[in-house]
Image (cartoon, rainbow, N blue to C red):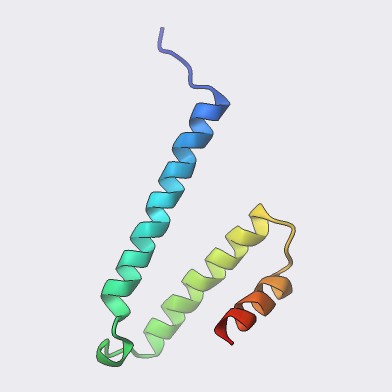
Length: 80
C-alpha cells in the first residue's frame, strides 16, 4: 500500500509549486516585455496583462481578508 501524504507534506509541496509558478510567470513576463519600449506591445498585450493582473488580485483576495479596493489602493501606493 502506498504511503499517504500528510496535509503538511501536501501543503509544503503545493507552496513550492506555487513559488515555482510565480517565478516562471515573472520570467515569462520579463522575457516578453522587457524592455517595454522594445517589446512592440499592442492592445492585445494590454488585455492579456489585465487578465493576468486580475487573476492575481482574485487569488490574493481568496487568500486574505483584503477587499479588491484595498488591493487596488496598495498597488496605487506602490506605483507612487
